[in-house]
Amino acid sequence: MKINNIDQYRDLAAKVLKEDAAAVEALLESMYKNGERSDAHLYESERYSLLAGGKRVRPALVLEFCRLFGGNTEDALPFAVAVEMIHTSSLIHDDLPCMDDDDLRRGRPTNHKVYGEAVALLAGDGMLMDAFGVVAGNTRVPPEVRADAVQLLSLASGSFGMVRGQIIDMFGETHALSEEELLTLHNNKTGALIRVSAQLGCLAAGYRKGSAEMTAAEHYADKIGLVFQIIDDLLDVTSSAEVMGKSVGGDATHHKNTYLTFHAIEEAEMIAERLTEEALDEISAFANAERLVALGAYLAVRKH
Ligand code: GRG
Image (cartoon, rainbow, N blue to C red; front, side, top):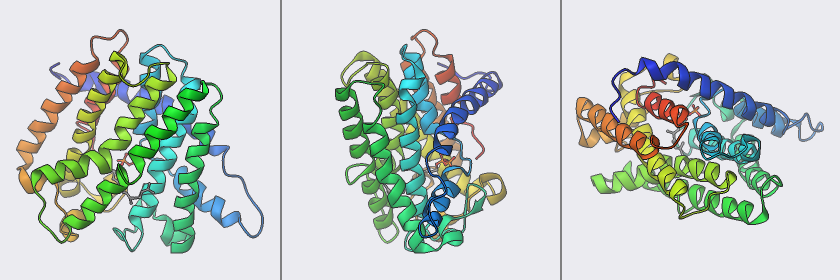
């Protein structure tokens, strides 16, 4: 599917992200309350990062795949919130001095800059574990769907998904990676959570692994997941901290292997466009796919 005029998708994508973020943020808002004198700073630091904005792309994918396949988005909302909690925990940990040592995230000082390293570590740990409880406690869907969701989320975020991607990324700081290794890195560090978001939306709508619906969702997500990381690599060299709300230029500082290690900027942009068109082809034949088409098209031209 050729993207001839991106402007036609921009408004719809913004509307989709805004609507879905509102539902997700309302539930997040209710999760961590004031606490006692001795533990209030844990909940405050969790709220600080969870309610700091962010594009909410992953939860939007959960809700939109549920909607696309005829589900009730209320059934998918706990799954959407859980993915955002895991994503946010990974951002807190990624920013720590022992990882990327960043000062800015989502336009604000990073969690550890405000609350200290130990509290930031625990805030990330806490919301990561809480996320699995939120999924298992989603009584709006049958127990076997919850069990599938827990397993898929665990695979996507743990040692066989995002954490694996992060360790390959760290290895790459001191070793030259092959392009194949870089793709494995991206597919795990960024792609796995994007893929599971699409899968959880399908699960909430009643479609299990192996169904034509979930397979199409996985193909779409794998392609836009790679595009997401290519654009992230491009923005790291072409954008600014003001626009991004996080530091830029860190890839070069940390000697990271990125898509631009292997491809010139214009080539990477063309690959991102081609992958996006292929992603849209995976879903455009389903009725009412416009919202996910717009979201996929927008992600390829996002500026932050
Ligand atoms: C805590 C499970 C867990 C893992 C820790 C640190 C780490 C292991 C993994 C790092 C994963 C990571 C930070 C990947 C980068 C993914 C990425 C492109 C993040 C930016 O996502 P956006 O642009 O950010 O969606 P917003 O702020 O909009 O949500």
